Image (cartoon, rainbow, N blue to C red; front, side, top):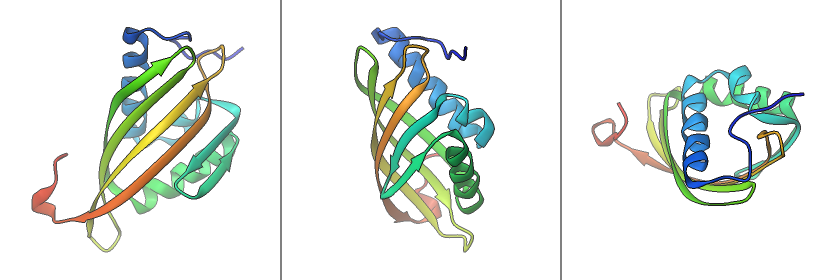
Length: 137
């Protein structure tokens, strides 16, 4: 049986830990590593895209990080209750043409009893920025 500690129900300490673990994993830009935090049948809404299952997550992330160069993410706990966590985040990346962007958004996460994320709903907006205006270097 797969488990990803900490397990729900979350406390402030374990919710903060879960958020930091997610930030660290996403900043690794390793689709395999990131995908292992999700259930095999995970359900995502990422912007307007619907993604179902760990294999689709891996393919999505591989494609994402091929297009979003120099990706750097910061996540912040917004709230939590029982097996759910809400975060807000921002990340920066450069596209293949060399243009910089900062993306802002919110995510709602729902975990199963084994600490794997079963649902992830992300709303994200992009802002074109100048390289001199980057926060994350």
